[in-house]
Length: 189
Image 1: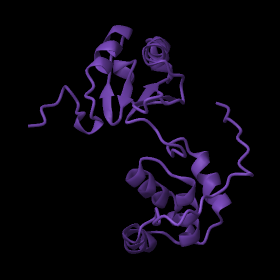
Image 2: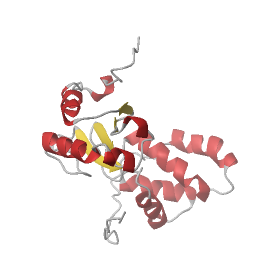
Image 3: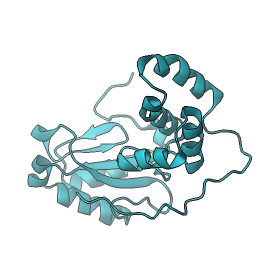
Image 4: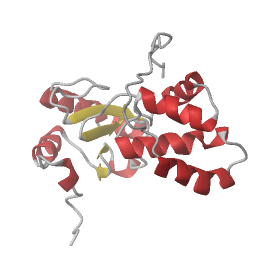
């Protein structure tokens, strides 16, 4: 897989006087929970990025600069790390993150048809977010669901044995409020 090249040399880190994105509580957790488990402060970068993303839903440029300052790493090194891994989001994503598996098993069983149906229904390309900010569509390498291919995740809920028709049912059945979304096959009571 080829990585898209982006010229980030001119990327400015906004300094807008807003409250820090890496909060004191986050710093305390990193200091107390992660620093003792890792040999250097620099080694805590990945957990710090996960923490920021979990808290904000993505990692703004200002947060990259703040975590770099806290860990004693240049903002460029933090950005290099965050942009290397596909799991980190450096721009906002939709309320519903749709991740279609494109592994060999899923491809053999029709993941391309699934992706095409989603693109058509939502009028979005892979890697993009719908104009209303509700959906982001991406493909990923493996969900570990080869026996029930093709498969996808919507947020953290796995959908298997997909067809274009099932895609329509799933997308049409999503609640307007993404926080109310639960796995329809599980009784949450």
